[in-house]
Image (cartoon, rainbow, N blue to C red; front, side, top):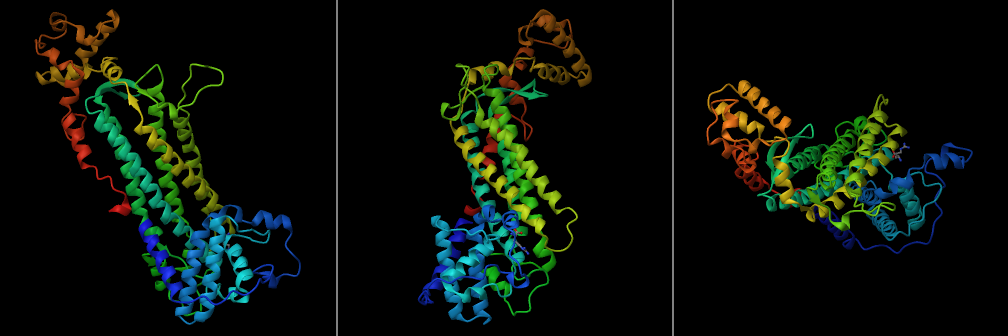
Length: 490
Ligand code: ARG
């Protein structure tokens, strides 16, 4: 994706080079408001502040200006405005972009949103020719376009970060191929597994997240510009040309839908929420594992925090914060869904409320992924402790039942027999592995001297050789099947 955007930029610059810039005129005072003609009295400053989206939508300046440049080039190609005017406008837009990039752009209270802010500044720089840029477009199709460009870029950004975390988890899985660990259900000791298998479960979850993002890209990558305020435009525009310039794969087919559709944001927020839920599960595991009561893993000191009161503490705040962010991520999705519910056709200002949840979720997920990947890279697992824990809590009971079942005893009956053996052990504070053959035979004459080879955690792991199970061969096959390249590398 980054490569594509680079190409788009190179294309813009080549266009500018072949069209020498006319000298800049002096400063111009733009009309106070784009829509002031209809009004006699000025807007109350309270209303100005309340309605303005610039404090948050200013981060769309790259997208907004890129879309404006493409629109302007199209207007010139279609002879809707002159080449000369287009050159002046594009040069002005580049200066505005530079000001945003350098952080020197000065917002005015009258700037209702990013679109008006850019246009106001363009007018100051170029004079009345700036007013031609808005020919055959509306802020309604503009904002939809900006948002699509923004999400397209962040689909690639999030994908890259997911891939990076997958790589960190896969590297740990490769290192821990010999580490037997306890597997849980209901957070109760269940059966021994390979630690690698557990880590790769997260890689599989993240893989679905990446597919989900890739799946939505074709629905995001559609040009809305050219839909006007709601009904289309009377000007002979070339929407396919604009789509080509902005690397959209197609154009919207219904102007009413195009200006009011925010499904693509809902889908993106849903994907981000699910990533957050997945990360919260992984973080929960980390939080448990690094508790001294578990002692399965050592957090790197660089990624842990202390307590101001209790000197002994080494807290997993990073994992807790990521787990906590899942609440916001789900909230942001619900917030947009409720905003959209029962909105009349077509654009309504309610839609301005789509941005803050979107930005918040993007920031939360990208920041979480940025911090968790290096943390994973530095985790140190306590292999001995994991191995020891792998057979605690009678995790080998299923082996014993499988053993009897392999001798022809119906599994249900075998389960019942082993249940009684476990109770026998609980009452005497013994472990299954410690029982000698004569003790075992009191429960079933089917036990023979090979039974103890079944009561080994590693043997239990290795017996789970059916595809998808935790045997070493299966785990290695999972690692081999991974194709950890980012979408843009493919
Ligand atoms: N700031 C607006 C938004 O985010 C842009 C579109 C405004 N359109 C309008 N007709 N006022 O939705």
